[in-house]
Image (cartoon, rainbow, N blue to C red):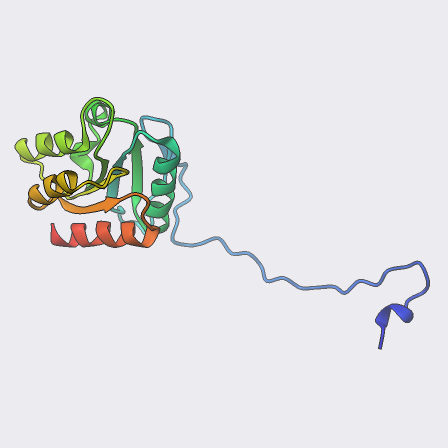
Length: 171
């Protein structure tokens, strides 16, 4: 049966739909979000406990933003930096629970940053990422004992989250 045939000609019929009330998530505190040294939002505390903080050192803005979104969706606080020097200058490395480091950066490489931190007694778990997947690069990453993982680009968000979670559990 065509319901439009029952309506007066020229007047549309509408059905009232009841949507459930939107309830804000009780886990997220209503504080104002803060920003890191490069102006990116840092999410508020969840459930009263601090989430693990992962520094992302990547010079490609689109890759950095994608990694940041994946980490935040996975329950981490992602703090991006465009260079190893910027991360060191901000003093953010000391508070990091883990690192996602591009290997080939302008200036100090991801390997150099990791070696400097390990030499200073701060062996933070690190995930090395690179667009140039070469045997020598892979061997160097594997030679940095306890560093974490090595992911050639492109990689899936799931692989990144698995690598970060595993590195943090091992540490």
